[in-house]
Length: 323
Image (cartoon, rainbow, N blue to C red; front, side, top):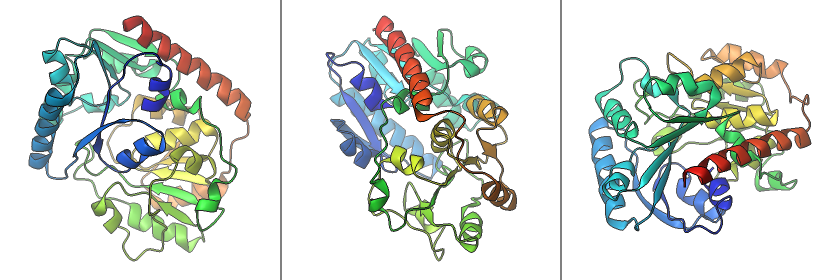
């Protein structure tokens, strides 16, 4: 999404930062995003706190003087932006971080986010976020459509894979505070998929997530791939987080979420209600769903592109008015 927003703000001076989590650094290079990458995520809650503090302090040291900060679900740059007198803008869609009894670090992170001047969220999540933020602005649809507006499928993409037909599996985000402590269903799920002769492209974010499928015949790409092409050409996408499932859902690709939380995001609940997303942590039910469903051709690619472009334009108008 950072590329879609940056491209929509050409003519402005933009400073981009990222941190080492999953394929972020490689993807920034693939999409031509020039920026500073520093810091990383941690499994251990105590180390996670130190990593947050290190990155926040580094942001304060290296960030140039600017008028505005735009952050995607990330509280880390907010303190330094506030100290520099910037207008702070957050784009969020994960409303479950504000529900129930959250870990201490999550509560601190939430309080930092609540200091932002503007929060931009999907319309379906407005009620959830309005309970915690004063200035909530909304847009129709889903954040994934903002960058899908610019997506042009590569017909030769599968030549970079060892097979033409496959399903994508992305594990639960086990370092996330709202997920930590849950057991992954990925090893069992991958074994079932292989038993039914599915080719599996497995996308771990780190070594720990790669290790959980040790001994299972899955393909782990040696380098970062264009995620939208990977989703577009897949027979199905299965993920324990959310973004890839929503990308698949709005592209008409069978989408399965096995998110482990006790509650689902408002955007996911809406997609489930539209029968565009299936949620379960029962591996047998997931397999049954895959065997019964294929691509959704109800909307043509052209129709989907029109919708996505309208949503992208809507969001860019909001941002430009604030700036």
